[in-house]
Length: 535
Image 1 (cartoon, rainbow, N blue to C red):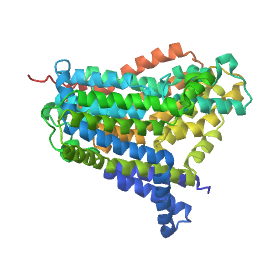
Image 2: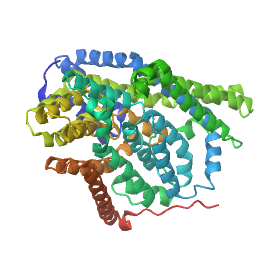
Image 3: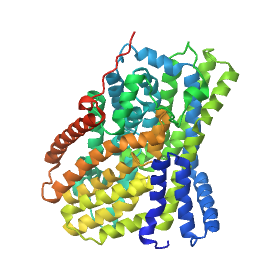
Image 4: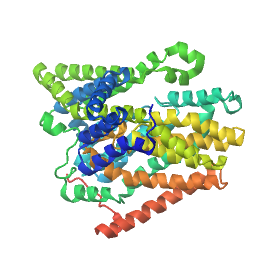
């Protein structure tokens, strides 16, 4: 790997700045990848272009990535069948008696996002597709739905005691301590260390709470205030000129009026069940469970393969239902499948380029440069959580990957905090928690993050609109998290005190910002009116 120093920041920064400035995500991402290719090719644009294409091909044929790409196409096919048959609208009608207001729809989206805790990808799919017709009907903006979807995906999956994330996280913790020859028996092993770190994941916890606050009280700020006011007053859930990643209504046409809730419920349940079973099966099943419990199973599971199986089963069940119930002919069903898969082309292109820019940042040494700068500062044990949180936030935002950030930062944060303190205690647990929290910050608000892209995709939101409306809330939660790590640094290390303090600070910040932006935009208190569906 070549040493580019501060220039190693160029590929991700160019991609992010261009994406927000031009609102052309594909062009911006390709530009970032291309700049990285040119850099590692000795600044030769011809060789750099060839390198760029090599990275794209490599990521397109990577085993994990190709499963996710196929998974997305199959999800698009399943959504096509469910939508065109009228199943999604049938769910909307079934819930109409219970959800008649914008507040009810927003809170239901939050609750569903918390309940789908076992996988962030599955979370974005189910919450986005289930809630979209409901939030559209109650005049909740697509930007708000994407925010609810995104902020209850990675933050929830990252702290859930059973999820596709925990096996990976526990494995990284165990590896880091094993290299230090540290016995974790006293804290319950690597899983115990993981559990002790959860209360120190301030950003994840505060982000989930903030979603509920804005969903229930309808007090907004930043670009989201404009988006929500537009939706309530005009009924436009998308701004004029917006380009949602999934244009279901345009691509598939109007759904059938005699849709059945069964065409929605059973395919979605099939997706969940087969995915969970796939994780169990690929993780070793009963044999792996007998050796190390559920965490051992999840740690060995191939979640991409499980998601692929689940999405295929979803399409099969949906197809069987629409044909068996005579809601669609075979020709109509096939057409809906193909059109549904076509919806995913732009989103999958963005995903592929997001993975490719990770290859570019690896090649130019973006993450090692950031870590080197931080390590050279030299800090005491109590301040390590604050430092690693800041670094993890920056790495995850500029590279668009939380898991990549975890793999980079945990092997540094754990030896650093343990080496300075000489024992396993709050400093070490808070450092672990800070890495996970900082990594999730970027995963759920960076414009080049796969989860951010998928949230835009399944919520039917313009991707850049989603990013620009969500970032103020992400920055609010992360800023309060920074204050808590600062308090930790000066000696207040009890999470049972820090978390309530953080909750109070979050409410104060949310209230003050909504008041300020409300005055700026002429919306009293930043409070968007509650819309009630007329019968």
